[in-house]
Image (cartoon, rainbow, N blue to C red; front, side, top):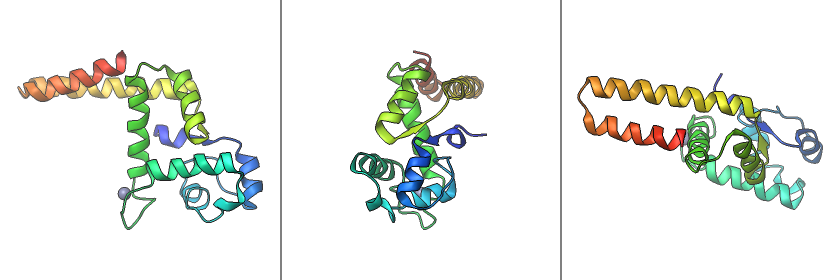
Length: 151
Ligand SMILES: [Zn+2]
């Protein structure tokens, strides 16, 4: 399962009751993207919640794809956001705190940790492949990216 399947809406029950409709707890579930982040019931939310829901929509759901928000880009953008936080030196617990503050979503720190671990392993594998192909420059880019992640 991708890490984006393990990102959950905070205060889910409260939000569902403000919106007077139910939606899945997973932030990247299709129905959540439509109902919560799609904008329709937004005015029913309290102001602090509205701001963060809007920020999420603006930062991750802003592509012009016809199938937006179901085109895969929101998930990709969220993953880059996680990797950026890691590159800034944040650990799993701090990353969860920041995403809750920024966007009113959360994950379990253990899931974030295994995502970061597997991300680093993927980069290591890519680095070795690039070395084999003598793509020195590419290997160097990947190596730097991995160094950022392992801090
Ligand atoms: Zn898209």
